[in-house]
Length: 287
Image (tube, rainbow, N blue to C red; front, side):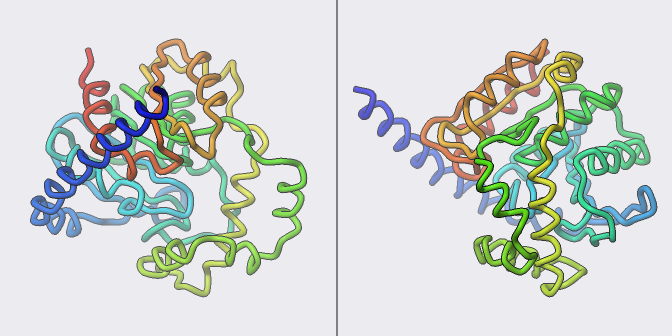
């Protein structure tokens, strides 16, 4: 019975996905309009790329590591722009934003994001983050509560999970070039297509992102307990982030909600968009 139900859920997701693709294709004119909205702001002494379009309560989109606005939210951008003002941000060394000489840091990225929002006179916004972006959303909600109305975080972790000591040791001993070749080719191609630093900078980014991912502790349980904004934690049942860790985060949040996506791995926003988008919109629109 469990196998039958799982197959039915998977089939339902894919059938919805086919119809969803038609909707996305029909919005191509809106996509073209969005592509003209990108701009840079100088925040904390360096450039940050962002896009702003749509109307309504601000919805801040925070992409995943070694990803960009487009690769993280290609099935959310136009859907949510029909309901909200979108502010989509690319962090240092990601997408169109140039890299700096500094190491990547979740806290620095969260500060850049918060300072950018303040420079744009944005407050009481909803935050939607995937993977590393989910971590940033939780950090901003913890340390800049005046900026936040509601939070959605998918595939986020608050400490290093899912790796053995041996795996961690191997990563730390690898060269940037070795780490760069460990990623799927599509990530290098996506980076090279838009980065102002060029494809030759990719190994440096690979090293920096792995150092970021090996951050041992980002938020403690007591920090999560101080997040007052309603927060929806999303996780695939086959996610890189163990479901048990997502449950831990959910339980520590005073106003947390939890949604486990069936038959789905880490890329929830891409693989289960037809299922998730209405769920997320309902959560954002809740009183």
